[in-house]
Length: 586
Image (cartoon, rainbow, N blue to C red; front, side):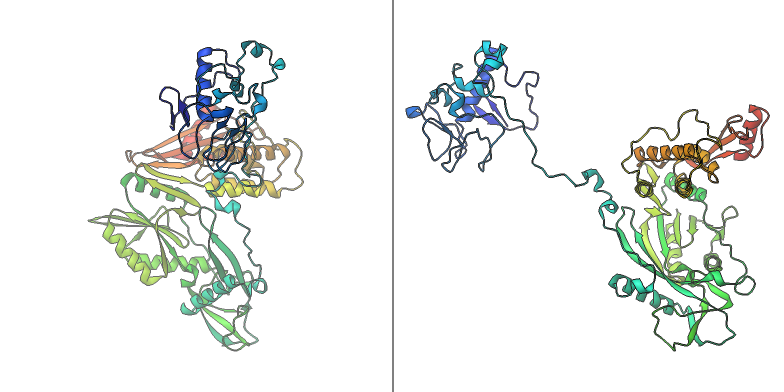
């Protein structure tokens, strides 16, 4: 809000230009000083009750700035008849930070020029500046000068996190109690409800039969396992409870044989996302509830009753008919069950990735990617995608998650320009876990021309922290090719890490602090052309004199695969090192 001296009006605007280059209380230009005096006279005579200035001079030397109440020789700024010692510019009786206008700062307390006068000889001009130019040169001799009071905020912000952290609920949420055993969980409503739901699912799936226990039976134990599932923003989604068989007591050849089960490669996931972004295909995400319970067991396995299970005789045990979490063959039996279902539905298994299933029809193509119990369905045959979803619903108990947004810890955001894949939540959790959330950021993941060796620095007393951070960084490099080389270097010292190696790891964390929102982008436009780039240094390793290969593969404008690895043998020349790198990528 500012005063217009020409139109004698108070104007309110969003964009106001102030004379900030002129000192606050020292103005020697007479024209500027006259404008300030006129503005001051208007503001002091502005009535808060009527919203208009009181014209004319005051009577009997009194100046009134309110609709009620007068005081001899003083300017009243209160609407309730109270005498105010400061100039008020706000309603509701709030006092502003301007300097005092009491009679002590004026040589003439009853000067009528305070009311609607434009005279420049008013001594009340000491509110903003001295009217005597000579006093401006020596302010120490100016008894009438009063330095304006500093404006101070009254907001209470101590102990409150910055507003920029409000988008991550996990920082401000209280720790969630996760029980370690049945005794700790029993009696808590949330965990009791989750255990009841788990038992109902097991009984509905006919996972076991209760049989009397005999001395010749080989019975494995059982245990309750508790956990929570979080959303990408860090908030709680649901409580998870599983009945887990203690498979560590199983004997090979008696209780199990083959245990291998394939999972989707991260390179395949990136390829599917790149093709879907380029072709504009929808990405539908499905989740199989209690996936391992669908596998059919070929072996006869007996398991002890779960704690708190009250059905049947207490001397009975569970003879498993279907696979259960914790059994060594549970992942394999589940994948065999799923493989048979989708092949029967008309899909064929890919030769390059066993977790990728395809189907070509006259209407288009359908793609299904499975990672344990999470799957993505995409393609341009929309009717076939709908039929496949219904078929899976009849075979398994599915949960439709809509368009993919969070898959394998990857945050997937889609727009008309393409798909962005990032791991913001994972980076934040990593920084908080190792107390690097408030560290000083840096712009590069590793110092330039840094050479680390097996003897760099002193040996660490505890190797756990180093190995934990490096393991997390290796998973993070699935969407961050910018840290691939740095992670490859620090991964060479997992066995015997030293202080300089730990410093290099900490620098990577500092780099992640400044690049939390950086991710992998798959553009919607581009030519479906596969390109590969390879490079290598020569004898870069200080200890072995072996070279390091680095290569990446691009599909259109999307990077779908990359790797940085030390070569398995010493190269005799830089040309040989380059050829070895090219052979790896091909």
